[in-house]
Image (cartoon, rainbow, N blue to C red; front, side):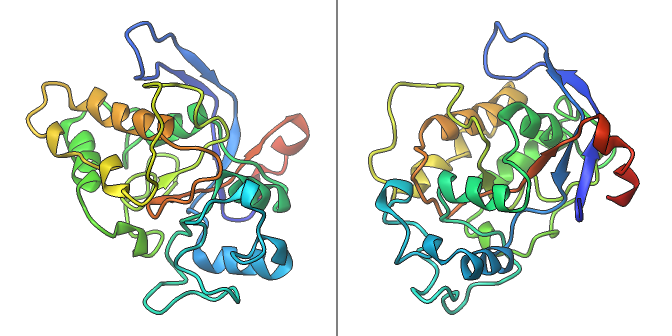
Length: 244
């Protein structure tokens, strides 16, 4: 489990409703960094059926790998060290499976993402929520190198500040019954300006994530949406944690 960190078991209360109850999180491992363009380039070479000109339409829309050439190379100005984006759920899931991993669940992702540098649950800190909301307003953060944001309590980088990330059950919490009709209008999904001055930044920051997840479909490619992989830890793998 190279370049992964162990997330110890625990519980948290999700911020997607007044009636939310505490959710238990079992011990698991998570990639330290989002999957990069360089990582995905290797995947495309080994599994060419996922290249932009060969992928089945069922598994990817017209935005799939828009910032790539048909031959599996990045277009000019794109960084190999940046998180891969414009990747559908199906492609992200397949990538993880080929690494003998999986996508994290929504609750696993939120559990790790609520940490700042020193605290496992930093959601009550104004500084933590203000950082997230300020990122929602920044353009083109997707082309920054992975590791350019802070390392959190779990030794994980870039949970906030670079890209949104797929989860295995991304649409399990529905904010509304409407889906995004025009995938090109990405800006409609990243407007955080209304949060400034909000009386509850913590709930607003979480709402933005859940609303975004509820607006996408599994075949969508979005410029600000990437992913990282997770791995289940069972009794047989606990003894190997020192190898992480």
